[in-house]
Length: 62
Image (cartoon, rainbow, N blue to C red; front, side, top):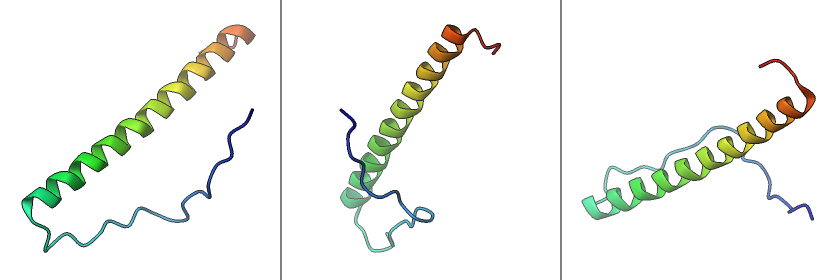
């Protein structure tokens, strides 16, 4: 079963204005960003593994 995706973001990432955030809010924001980066890196790894498996199956040169 194919999972439905939400709409893709249109345009670039727009960081929030953080000038008035306290230290705890900034640290929480950093944690959220790190979690999102890890999620994106996991997806990249999945795609690379899938491509490598397909290349091996079809014996495409690297």
